[in-house]
Length: 105
Image 1 (spheres, rainbow, N blue to C red):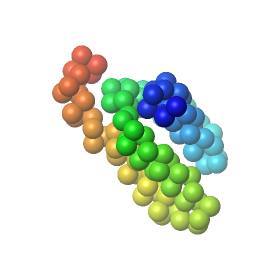
Image 2: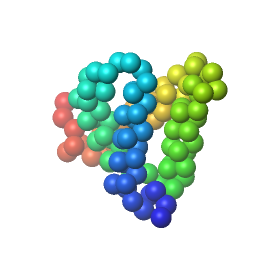
Image 3: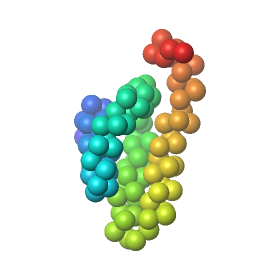
Image 4: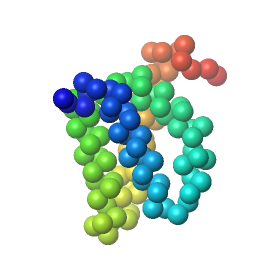
């Protein structure tokens, strides 16, 4: 089944990957520290269910992020993480306008 036909499964796998990205950092509390902020990102992610092309793009992004350290491409990995995180921020204003009841000032 394509990932876009199982949004809950997709989001669970996406969450697990993001959690695992913090594991090798030796910043054991980093994942807990970002939880309040993650709530807002999660809301944005849920309000824009991924279409098949978006899912494939996200998988490609995740793969590149995970592969970067093994390839010795630390700066490229950082740039990919920034671009990946920026995706939610770029769609935020549109989603806030479309679903104002999910946001407060």
